[in-house]
Image 1: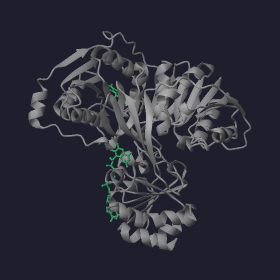
Image 2: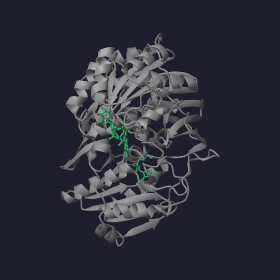
Image 3: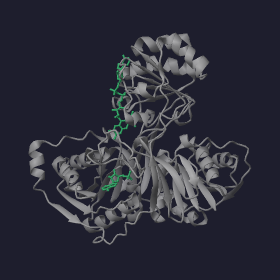
Image 4: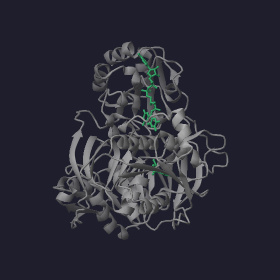
Length: 249
Length: 309
Ligand SMILES: Cc1cc2nc3c(=O)[nH]c(=O)nc-3n(C[C@H](O)[C@H](O)[C@H](O)COP(=O)(O)OP(=O)(O)OC[C@H]3O[C@@H](n4cnc5c(N)ncnc54)[C@H](O)[C@@H]3O)c2cc1C
Ligand SMILES: Nc1ncnc2c1ncn2[C@@H]1O[C@H](COP(=O)(O)O)[C@@H](O)[C@H]1O
């Protein structure tokens, strides 16, 4: 069984993001970029399924600028077998990402696509569900445990009130939550090996997908700053403040 | 112009975010209809009809909707959507699961997690874990939107909407819920709580989390929350997690105990009205957003606080 794993290149989760002075977006020049953390979890899960003999091949896909090749090399170093870059400098919104991924799924015919539940830059949380809709496949979002057997995936999902287990027929879409696994680090020998693994480059045009954005960003601003608070000396002082100043108890 | 709000419910009552989504629909303007898809869901339908500003409740009562299966709900909503300019749901795990599927089937880009309505086609939404707010304008014919509850005060009661039954769609048959393990608690739900006591890795383990924080939460009538580190370490179930990738809360009082204040955690609670932080590290970033900070060992301070209340 083949597994497709879309991986997005995003600003590293440790970076304190700064809004540009002209309010057109956030500063990306000279900022550390990494693979979206949920996509690392997706790659790890695919590699585990291959190690368990369930999967035979893992294809990592990224959509974006040339530099996404670095993200794909990381995926290859973690254990993906080959990679596809859909190269474009244009802004690609989740609906267009889902359409491009559908075009790739049509060519590659995987049985499973594992995506992150959310990209930590746009925080959209929608691409996997959209891809499932376009393919008319079932979906298991926010996965924290995956078992594949008898052409079905049994997936434990994190929902608001606790956990839910769903059984979906393959081919299917899974999106990862934080507690699905702990991604491995790419070792130096694997990073070296990854350099020789195949990486194909294609364009949205070649895939026949119209990627025109549907949402226009009018401005991007910083959140309102909370006014500085105070340190209190002890519990009595805290209770006094909460009762008499904040009036919340 | 009319808006359809998709209601999450347990067949008896509406989930907390629904009335906030209805409030967002008010801001957009026009008629507001609510869809209640469930099984034996007359109670939830009546609850939706009683929300102020709702003019019609569409009810579909069928075993296909006994559990919230996106594969079944999405085609039902897609069938109704052409009559509306906007389709809204709360940005809960339910809304996030179902609505993008609807959007893609309609060839629409979803607008996720809005916190403000500027005009019927322009909305404000947080990006980068709330470190920036983007104002976005949609060119799609139908706007598909998930609503962040903390951005909108819940619509009040007092409504008298008409209830109309509609027929069920086909069962997709490719997905089924095997089981649910829901956290049982007599405390208020995190998403709706006025006060929250939240514990982090500093709690040490699950037993200490419970023995130290439960008495405080009891005294305050508060919900319990946690950082990701506390959930990952197994102190508490996953649905306690507050943050960028957990629950977004904005209670009147949020007490962060043994939580360092990583941006991903702050993303979920920094809109709270009053924030208290208790941490032994005076440099912990949580103090930068706290209205009141108390430095010291939580195992001494928290019992002291509980006793003094
Ligand atoms: C993709 C991604 C998504 C994430 N999403 C979330 C999210 O939604 N929510 C979230 O919370 N995190 C999230 N995180 C994790 C986040 O980055 C932090 O790792 C996490 O919030 C840290 O939890 P903590 O503050 O409990 O632990 P720590 O950072 O370890 O802090 C523990 C604190 O306890 C204090 N302490 C210890 N002992 C005592 C004592 N006896 N008395 C008083 N104070 C004490 C310490 O001084 C310290 O400040 C995410 C991370 C990633 C990469
Ligand atoms: N440009 C992209 N390239 C590859 N994968 C992507 C891209 N954008 C989104 N994804 C995938 O979709 C998931 C959810 O993203 P989003 O819907 O934007 O929050 C991510 O975790 C990735 O797996």
